Image 1 (tube, protein in one colour):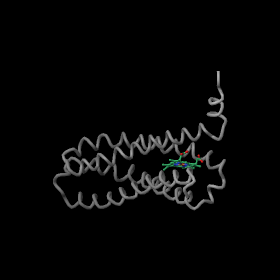
Image 2 (tube, helix red, strand yellow):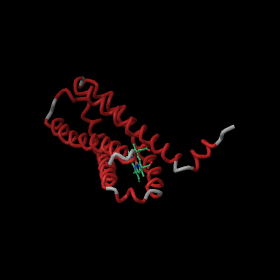
Image 3 (cartoon, helix red, strand yellow):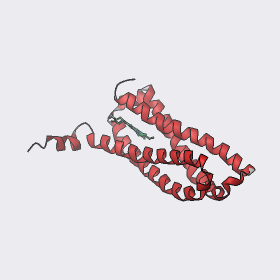
Length: 162
Ligand code: HEM
C-alpha cells in the first residue's frame, strides 16, 4: 500500500503545520464572518440584541481558539521560512495580525461586555448607545480590514502573486 502521502503529511515541507494553520484560519475567520453577518442582521432587527449578546461570547471563544492555533502553527512555519520575514507583504500581514490581536483584547474586555449591558435597551437610541455605536464601528472596521487583509495577503504571498 502507498503510504508515502502519510509520511509527507507529517515530515514533508511542514505539511501538517500548514494544514493546522488553515484549520485555525477556518475556525477563526468562520467565527469573525458569523459575528459580522449577525451584526448586519441586527442593524435591521435591533430587537435581536438580547439574544445576540448571549451568543457573541461563544463566537468570541471560537475566534480566540482559532487565533491561538494560527499563532502556534504560524511560529514554526515562519521559523522554517526566514526569507518571509523580509517580504514587505508578509510584514504587512504581521501588522494586520497585531491589529486583530489588540482589537480582540479591546472587544473581549470593553466592547463585548458593554454590548451585553446596552443590548436589551438598544431600541431606545440613548446618547450612550449612539456613542457606543461610533466606537464599535471603528473596532468593526479594524476587524474586517485586519482579518481579511491577513488572509488575502497570506494567500497572495503563498501563491507567488506578490
Ligand atoms: C490573523 C491571523 C492569521 C491568518 C488569518 C493567517 C492566514 C494564513 C493563510 C490563509 C495562509 C496561507 C496558507 C496556505 O495556503 O498554505 C497563511 C500562511 C502562513 N502564515 Fe498565517 N495567518 C495568521 C497568523 C499567522 C501568524 C501569527 C504567523 C506566524 C507567527 C503566520 C505565519 C504564516 C506563514 C509562515 C505562512 C506561509 C506558509 C507556507 O509557506 O506555506 N500566520 N496564513
